Image (cartoon, rainbow, N blue to C red; front, side, top):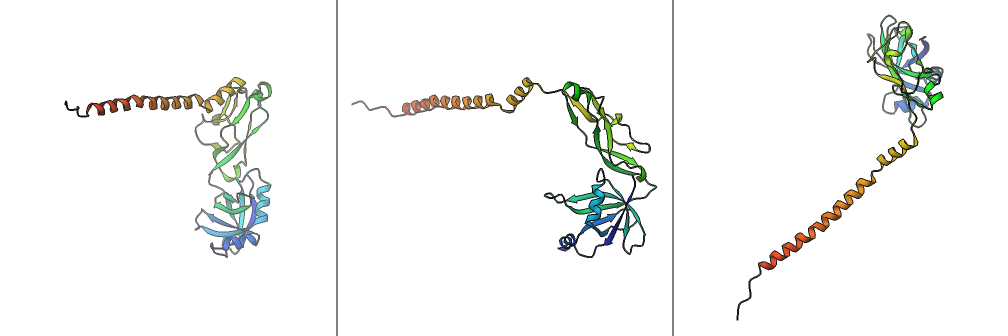
Length: 241
């Protein structure tokens, strides 16, 4: 992955109320950590960052960070996390992790399917995307933005596991090789849909519980009569005249 240049500035406003003022001025609060330096609070231009995100296939980004008045002219960093506003999707905060060009990094990379599965095209099957991200290890220069998996030959009932995925040279996939990433499921029949609906609404069980309650209530009546009979037996006998 090629790194892109991005300018940053030391944070000037505090956290309390400062972030809101910062965003209103067109900048985003940020932090950089890692390497041999202490974590540093920064601010970056919102439009510049959003332009970089917009032209990228994912939010896994490498940036050459130039921090104003910093002792290092440039700092290679990985965009580790981007926080978005839930309603609008606007960027609220970004975390940078400083890395070295010569040291391997471990990153979660999104997986995308390519092509139309044969089981979907010819048999009406359903393509299931089971695993959406895969953990990889590589040098920063070899970091892929996404991992593309060709599903064209995937028939109904067949799966693609982590161990089946071919990645570019210099990239190592981590994790259990037997974990399913993509699969083609057989189409659901009308009978199966009816059975699933019936299982989701257990009306028979509700009626059974109701009947048991009614039986229990009816069973208590004789017990009450028996108790009343015993009470009558305990009454003192009338004296003979």
